[in-house]
Amino acid sequence: MYKEVLESIQGIGLYGVVSICIFFGFFSLMLIWAFALKKNYLNTMGNLPLDASELPEKSNDKTQS
Image (cartoon, rainbow, N blue to C red; front, top):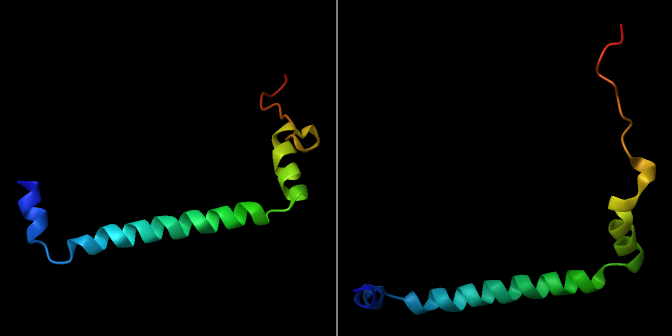
């Protein structure tokens, strides 16, 4: 049933080509961006969760009597 419906749509083959081109373009741009990153930036971002110098101060919301 779906085969007949899809065959009756004019230009349906173009959607496959366009979707592959969009995927390939996006993947290529992300690959270029990843290789263009500086090593210093990557090290800084990698160590960010482990950096204890920027922990928020703990506040005590309870009022002491």
